[in-house]
Amino acid sequence: MKNNQFAMALALSGVAVFSTAASAKTASDAEVAKQRAALEANTNGQGFGPQSPRDIEQTYGVNERSFGMAPNRSQLNLCNIHFHKNAEHRGGEYTAYAGNGDGKGSNTGFVYNGKLSSAQLKPVRGKVCAAKGDTLQAGDTLEVHYVFSSAQIQPGPTLGACLADSTMNPGLRVEGQVIVLANDRNAIDFNALAKVENINGYFQAPNIPWNTGVPIEYLGSTTGPSYNEQGSPLQVSWSVRPEVAVVDINSVADWCNDNVFDEDHAHGVRNLVTNPKLLSPISS
Image 1 (cartoon, rainbow, N blue to C red):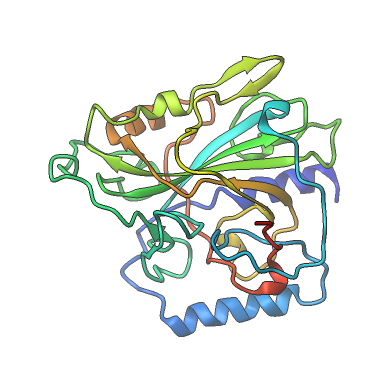
Image 2 (image 1 turned 90 degrees about the horizontal axis):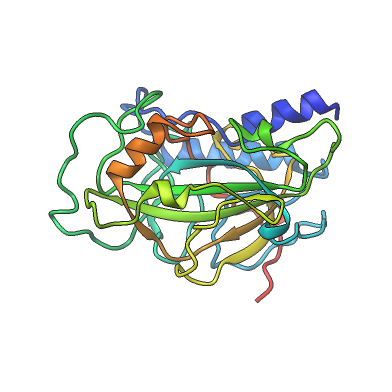
């Protein structure tokens, strides 16, 4: 694949827009089943590698396309941070299904199993990260993706920032952290979570939570609803934390107004991948 084609694939893979404009129509179980069948048909025998997202508590998978796990994030460059409305993965503290949504990535995925206080759920004034969809609200669940690359790059907009002309096949790692939004100035500041520093010559996000459970590591792909019926061709080493972090929604609003990644909205959610032929085994 030529570099510009690869960049386009990366740019499209994880940045599908979250919008509830079409959410009046809810996809039926039959429609979702049809999408899963199309994914099966479009990947069967085609050599696609393991896919994401998945149930991180389900370890079974028989995908035969093998690739090496990317190095620890400390040896890679942070290239992008973005988030999805509702968790794309399922497991740990986020197993409650949000529903089928509109069939295009909106209002689907998984949400926090726990509860916030009434004070934390108090509505916020103004719109939050609503540039390309409905405003985020207190109580919403997000899955944050910290994307790292072995390429010599700088952090920037879209997953295309993870590529360099000198590196056609960079190693990619995504650190996943599910958060729940609270109207609480004492909750975690998202600007701190998304802080970027140069450490030992690598761009890093030094404040990725360390206390939200042992990450589940597995081999997969890029995500986003553009791959509901097609396989993602991009290989990603995943590290997904099972516990949520409670984050101040006001700080998320501030971050959406000004960040190096030009992120100003939440992205859509790909259907959970359940076909064992599209899943890698997870080592216990």
